[in-house]
Structures are given as structure tokens and as C-alpha cells.
Image: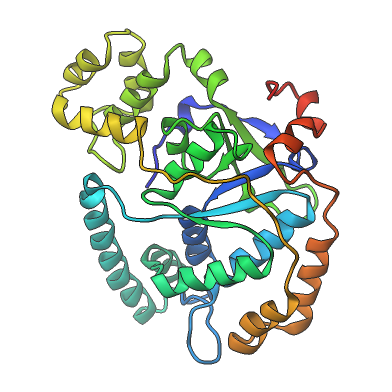
Length: 344
């Protein structure tokens, strides 16, 4: 779901070349669900191989990753582990929403309304464990590191960024900021959409807090009042009204009470964002591309076009000289400094 903070968060436009040499911890489930929702046929069905196996997740991940590598961007894909118990309600609501969307999709198909059918079908996406295992196999063949988080992948990515293992967390959701990511990169999906496409967006957490006039715990309190994956928000509070309440600097407990929320529940959610489960992650190492393994997985097993796979691999191999560790990245001069980003 993600926090709806767009109305109060401003992002800095980031030219693609400024990301060359930067390591990004990609929220894997966030990205892959985008692929499953958008890479579909006219009637809403996902793309599949001749045996009927879904391939939308492989298509998106392969072409997104080779495109990023071609720009010198170094993505580390982080996948979710066991969700916190507090997320159970959100998961149940998502399952129910998918079931409703499935029924609506079938009804739209029967009526010949392909536009509605495709829109509803996008809301029925499922990511299975075997699909994740295929993605890990694919990324390994591309020489790209992956990590299985003990809990939320987004929390793991944010922790890696806060510890300097990677330069930034990459996700379309704003939750990374509540988990403490010092930098959040959004808009990686825009890569490869042709000339004139805007770059990514960078949100610097320290700058954001200064602009909003709040601290880290108050940002979490704002999220709790609006509603997170771990709690339902206060009735009638959107981001702007929640920010106005938090700016009164009442402290966490009084803010929660003023919003009419349960304090004990809010404290639990606060701890999830403050101290999420995470694994120690070493500095990422990027390996060579294994074309034989790629051909076996994509061409032989799933019917990808051999020439297209080769072209994408060639693009990935044209990547500029890039830093391969946080220490190297700190010394890698890019256009980012010219655009006023804070020093490392």
C-alpha cells in the first residue's frame, strides 16, 4: 500500500548519469508487483511462456536490471521475509481486494470491456515463492547481488542505506523514510522509456525533516496518524492535517492521543519503524554476467527471444566505469554534487 505522503514530500530531480557508480538497495517486492501489475496483455492476463508459466516478473526484472547496469547504476535486490504480525490485517485486506478485483475482471471480460478488465486484472497480482526463486536465479546470472530480509524488504533496504552499505534505498513507497533511509530514490521504472524521459527522484531525509519542521519520531507519528501497513490511521486525517498536528510538537504520546488512536498500538508500530528486523549485509560484490545461465533460464525454459536477450546483455556490459563499494562510491565524483546533494 505505502504511505500517501506525496502532497507533503518534495523530491529533487536526479539525472540518470548522476546515479552512475551508486549502489541502490531495491525493494524487490515493490518493484516486482509493479511488473506484475503493468506487464500484461490487452485483456489483463499476464505474459506467460508456451507452458503457461507467468513471465511478467522475469521480463520486468531482466530489462529493468540490464538497463540500470547499462547506466552504471548498481542495484542490490532485497526481498521480503516474514512480515510482522501487525501486518496481518493489511494482508487480509489485500487478499480480499484481490478477490473482488478478480470477480470484477471476469465480469468486465464477459462484457467485452477490455479497458476495465486490464485495470482490474492489475489488482489481482500474485508473487509466489517459486517466482522469487526464479528472480534470484536470474539476478545471480546477471552478476547482481540479492538479499533475503528477515522481515520487510523495505526495512532491510533502509537499514543498509543508513549503515552506508549502499548509497540509497530504492522504492516507490515512502515508508523507507520512516524506516530511517537517509536517501530514497524513486522513479526507477522510468528508465528505458525513451528520450526526454525525466530522471529519477531523490528524497533526502534530513532535508525533508528540516523542510517539514519535524524530527524522525514525529515523521513516524505522522505516518501512524495517516495509517501504515501496520495500523489503521485516524479518521479524517490525511497527510496535511496530520502534519499540522505533528508540528504542534506535542510529543509522540499526546499526538497519538489527540488523533484518537490507541497509544499501546501506536507504540508497537513506532518500534517496528525504529528497530525493524534486519540482517547484517556486507558490502555488495557484483560479478560477471553468465550468458549461458541466462539463456538456459530465459530462452530455453521460458521462450524469450534469444536476440533480445543478447541485446539487453550487451547493453548491460556497456555500463560506465562504476564504483563497486560504498568506499569507492564516496570518492566517485558525479553530477549529484553539482545538484546540491549533501556530502557523503
